[in-house]
Image (cartoon, rainbow, N blue to C red; front, side, top):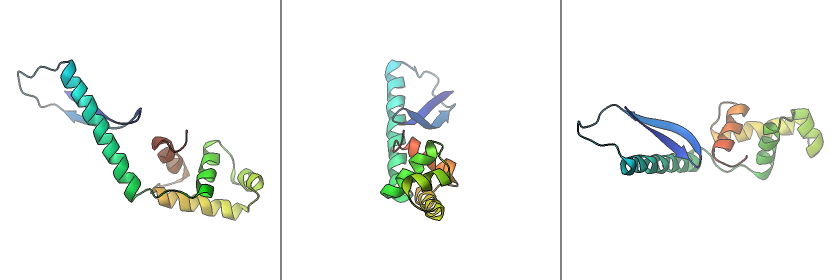
Length: 119
């Protein structure tokens, strides 16, 4: 069986698996390097297509809110520190989740980490 990781930067975002190979195929260093490069190219293509279609850029405030969520701040803490209302914080969260095509705030933060937007 051959398993090729699909990567974006240093993050594995999927795998290509195959159990089919010709009987006399030799899997050497050169072939493994080719598979690795293919996985990187596939990962970049996936990220580019997701970014352009499903993940419009967040506004400065939306991104700030998502970073603060990743740091573990509550809605109340964010509102106090940013001098905005809690309902405004909630609206930024909803908008960011929608723009990222995420299911919830945890998924949205994960997408931003995966894309390298936040670290």
